[in-house]
Image (cartoon, rainbow, N blue to C red; front, top):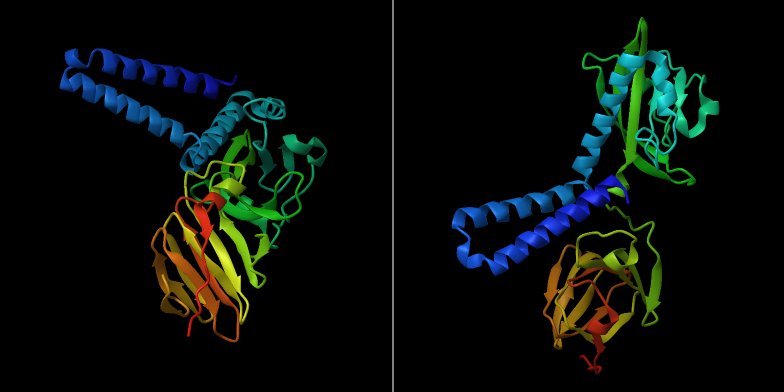
Length: 315
């Protein structure tokens, strides 16, 4: 069990003990004591949330780089050996340090030490941006430090992801270095786009894809709603059905009619319609192009929340 998990367990047990004490001794607890307990519990909850958030990761990255610079000040180039140690604070999972001279020579690079000694001043990111120059210019700037965002594939992957890297100037004797460490943003903030989602077909002419659904990702998104991209071909329709939850439709393109309890609502780009829970709904594409809209469900769409309904003939 790592240190964070141990701390979490201790905090959890502490909260439970406080809760039990509050239940058993509530008559003897003063308002000030109860306020203090509530404040402590809120502080613990906030701390646990922060340790998995973007703000925490930024601070952790800055701290790691600052500590690396301090170690270089103390131990000189001997610090590089520490930075290369696997499963250390300096090198674990996707976390590592990259140390360059400001001439662009990489002198410490734990993920692949065979790359040390290379001149990477001309390094470019996935989009062709001059990453090497950006790193060096940031280190040589008046502040001597800063953040750089760029597109870079994760280890073992070929498609790029947004990486956010902190760069700081350091020196050993007369030699000036830059120290960097970064992280992939989508490990902390969920993103998706229509080009990357998988679609499936319903009702013969309708394509649906989950843009956001907490049940289809391997991380806790902290939300209980879903957003589906719905495409109805010309002449197509969604069969009558009911949802036990309210559902919002936001029209992206095309024309059509949404029937709610057989009452027609003309659909056009930019329109938003809230379908009340347990209301029969039926959507038709009446135009010559695809009818596209977002269907937003809370709680997130689930098969057990949908019930098909009898068809109604519309004039």
